[in-house]
Length: 290
Length: 310
Image (cartoon, rainbow over all chains, first blue to last red; front, top):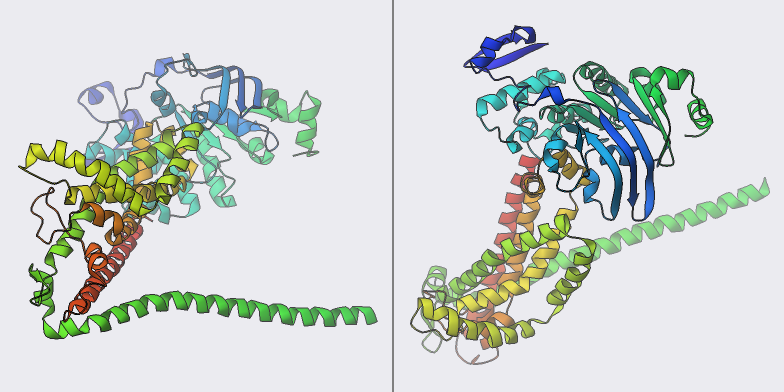
């Protein structure tokens, strides 16, 4: 991938061209702006997670491991707790009334639900990518720059580079470079969804949590997103909640099948799709219920 | 075959009635809507006709920009009243806007259900109290507080019946209105938008500041406009604490005399004086025009803002 660096003049660099000396000279790399420590990267480990919302047990004793740099698909019928599991991974459930969580979620060895955890820096590691695109009420440029601004990067030049880098990463740059400062709400739905992805990537997450990310899109836009996911899994761990089995079949490395708040079966895509062990999984894959 | 033919006829007949009802409902609704629009026009025209005599005698400029008010001698200067109205409204808005804004943010973003269960009924009571009660409360609490505690720090002497007292009381009256408007506004912001911001690692305050307030800014402007229009016309409570002194208010602790108070105090008395009734009608007309212009201007601003955001 070609990465442009706006350093007085616009220069073009290949990622492989970046070497220690150049970095020491103070070149700004739009994808390494937070000085994150990559050595601590690891899987998300969920241990015996129980979640109840207003006395209804939504997740029952869920244990799973979400591998790094792979696409994990969570499948299952509606209302089985897929989205709740996804949201419990970055503690967005905190703001719902009457939620009780028991169990452990470990991200890079950090316990998510321990008392006194500073949640914002963990949330930054997890880009959330929701079902319907929801661009923030600002311009395209500001949507991407928002994440950097709230984490303290305000230098205009750096922001320009970040915006350009991530718009290119999702293939939006050519489409919107003329109107970066128009409201994001004026783009098409497919473009908005890609913008939301770029916005999430711009804070350098390790994980991408996608909640039925393509269900509101037309086939071509969802194909674009799927292709992006396949490209992005080289650098990110992607967790995708999906209703379409075919999508899971196309892109999943790992599959977690949930039913009524429990994980029925989990394993590599090949194993689940070709040789499901449990009866429920077989039935679901055969389309007996959905 | 026969039966189906009959059913067809019945269906046709009923569909005729249905369509007639539909048309009637439409026209009835249109009529009622037109009546309410017509009311505004009629009130405006009525006020204009009634205030014509004084406008024939004196120039509008003289009436609006002089401060002499001696009806006996035929001097009608409306400036003190206009300024009084403005000052009281401005004071009220200045202190209620942040209070209402933060209360509404707290209620929608941070509070638990039981807090809402206590606060919302309390606000409803506050909104439902008759304005005389606020006036009496102002006289009993605010006025002495100003004259005994606050005013001595700033001026030599104040009775407490002042612009400040009127602004405070008026503010308390529009506070519940503003809060409920804001709460409704903030609740209309979709949850996903907050989640999008939070999931990027923003704190709740950052989310509120950059997403919630930004998104609802046009709505906030509209709500404030509505509250100002309401405040401009509020009469009884203001009249009870404002002092009713015809003067150009020089400090917050001076008495003032807003337009509605002028009309309420004097209409029905001294109507034998020439031009007096007409002058009061002109006062009403001024209020009408101010509120009218204010609404239109704010609507224009609103449209600009919405275009910018959406």
